[in-house]
Length: 142
Image 1: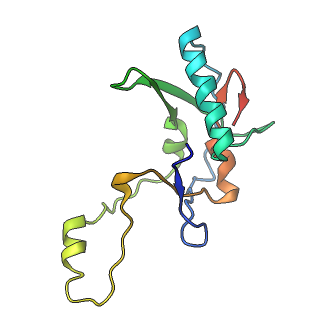
Image 2: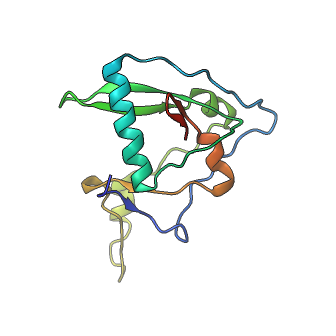
């Protein structure tokens, strides 16, 4: 986690557009075997040390996560935001073609872009939306 680069919050913050008519969903904690619980604990400790997550006492939205085996036989912890995704309106505007964007910059004096292929860049969540991304483990709410 030490190599995770953060995007300056003055530059970008991720905001959720949750339909206010949706009732928040609190999922029950899933149970995992001993090997998985060890992987979860390691990931939670790592995320806490890096400052990517913090512990909470209460939350109106609570998600579980899924453990996925990586090619190197380690576990990846992925948060299951299925319920939160259902509460957010769909974006009907697809991302633009990157090649077309780059080609369109031809002739401009200055061009900058972030190379996200060589690292993991964190974009912080808007503070009022952070609580909606809460997940639960045997070790607490984060």
